[in-house]
Length: 306
Ligand SMILES: Cc1ncc(COP(=O)(O)O)c(C=O)c1O
Image 1 (cartoon, rainbow, N blue to C red):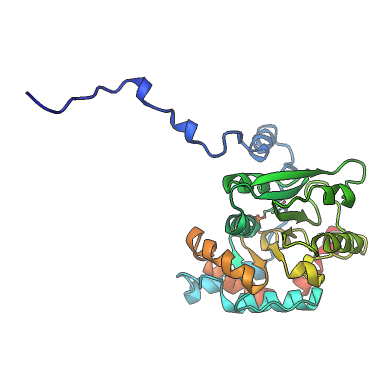
Image 2 (cartoon, protein in one colour):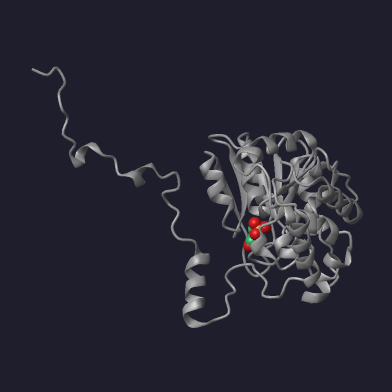
């Protein structure tokens, strides 16, 4: 007689696979829903932040050239150095903050990957992250996936301004990170110099990390100035500043962005980045490194939109 008992599986033995979901609340995104409706009704799709202007033919030629020259293998993990160098020059010229291209700038798969990577590198179970609502939809799942707890500061119509006293009241000894977005999606508000100074004052006595999503940095009107976190030394010293070439050059489909942060923070960021994507599209990086050398390519965007 066999000593092995043959077990017959019944449906009772199985936990449904979906029970293992780490994001049980997440359904189809609003972008997919509205995108499908827009296609069905041949409507203009305003649900997603992609421009319907054509990419500059100069930029497209530069990408073609890079492919033809043969930049078709992996780029360096942190990004092509030549691109990191021009990004560093751009930030220094616009915001008077020096980022070392070697250790403080990483090229990413759009701003989304930069945001996800920064959150993953620092948020542990039970850490609180302050999120200004309404917010772009990738923040919350990234926090939750890492065991963090989103803590909301709600903005209200008509001006969608941050009440800094209410904001300060949300800070606890568990607050690990604050997420801001200026110019803001979806409200279109911007954080002024005064706003950034309030934030700087509030964060100064803490060791809270700031994640500043600045993908619309060059889409700002009426002579207003984009107040990047990199302009404020006490903020810059604790910040990940995330940007997107997709938004700036009408090439959202290329998914190309970057993140700038002090070396100590960036070292942790890169530990995640190297295993999440390792590196980013090489020919596009080569092309952008040349294209970005002409500042009018991004500085004229305000007037274009105005
Ligand atoms: C506020 C905000 N952050 C980030 C992103 C994503 O940028 P990327 O396409 O470079 O990942 C978007 C895209 O709509 C956005 O609106």
